[in-house]
Amino acid sequence: MEMRQRVTTAAWLALAQWSQRLGADGMEAMRSRPGLAAAVDQHIAQIRDTIGHPQPEALAAYADGVADTVMAKGWSADETANGWEGASWPSLHLLAVCVLAARLS
Image (cartoon, rainbow, N blue to C red; front, side, top):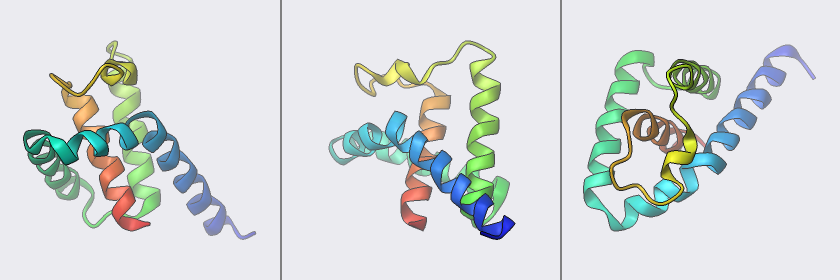
């Protein structure tokens, strides 16, 4: 397997892990909560402003960078385990990454 393909495969794996942690539940919640969907759309726009039209490699690296930064400040993906009411900026932002990844696949 060539290096580029390995990097792409690793990126998809990282994005799948974010989807398992936040994306699946978050996207389900978005279906019934228009306010959540609107907030995530704003985060999607911010991400696109930052990295342009995302490719899996850039999107995975971006998500990992955001997660590393906010985890160092005490954030945990577990905050949404009881629902998306009052979800923090990091949770919404990483959910937006999951939505973008789903659109790429």
